[in-house]
Image 1: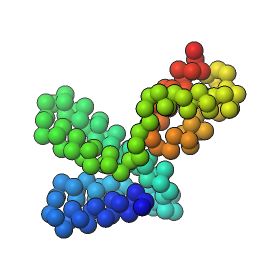
Image 2: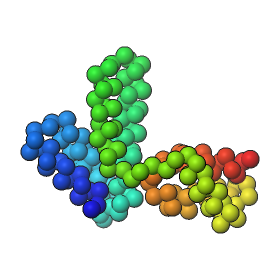
Image 3: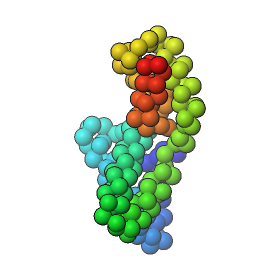
Image 4: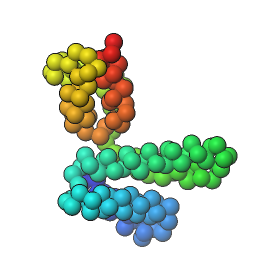
Length: 148
């Protein structure tokens, strides 16, 4: 079943069970997905939906950092709860070792030799990872092997 279908199914179940925290989080996620679809003028594929959810999680992580500066435990708890709900819809993340092995393989396939070849490696890596690691983690792994 597609991610969007899962979110919609869970949203209706949460509405029925009167779980307002889950309803709020899933509605926000669906609104972000619909906005992205409207922006692209076409339905999103699974990878694009994963990217939208990862952005939502990143926004909440940034909110947690700001709330920690202001010592606002209520905001921290709310955002952590939202993140735990959203993470259920993401594919299982790659371990650091798995990501590094994949990056090594792509570097060999593309013939990349230096950091200047990062533009060859990144698109292939992002496509093969398929949302199972953040782009920043992919970039960090590529830099590690191309700079060394």
